[in-house]
Length: 260
Ligand SMILES: [Zn+2]
Image (cartoon, rainbow, N blue to C red):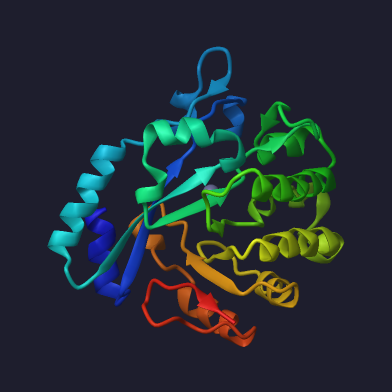
């Protein structure tokens, strides 16, 4: 976190939020579906348990960073996975109401439409299902996620499964094939007044802010998904230009959502 703040100062970033991962459930996964360094998290019977968030250590580190980098606006936050299913477990780990930002993510997809369905990661499901079904099933979960949780104000990486799209078999990802489903999910998000994250750590996808604006989305946040300092605010200038093109404007404070 210290190195991240140093990097922020170095590149002239005025504010940042440390949205630590908060995934409190376990799910089955094959070791070959995980990067090497994460494989030790998988138990012998094939269950991945994300390491718990050390909330106290995290908040102490935030305080130290704020003290050391007074020129930066440093926000607390979490990227809360499956918030509609995990609220009780999450509240045992951290006081969600005391955080500056609670972002909501879907990192797992239900295998059926039943509320208590087993779930799996998109990269696992691409090997088990037709690729289209992974994208559609993920997007169809978004209304349930919105209805089932009031804790989060930003929806992260709506294109998460696109990262693992099997282009060797399917060719390049074509958003047009899923336009209706993406627009429907975006309409649902816009209807709850939440912000959509523009995930600027990977390739930029201009259709996201475009469809978001067209479907009534008012606010965006920029997320660099930076798990290392190199990626802090990666593609940020291009993303700002893209957001501006679709009518979004910065707020008064650097940490404010951009809105239209
Ligand atoms: Zn995520």
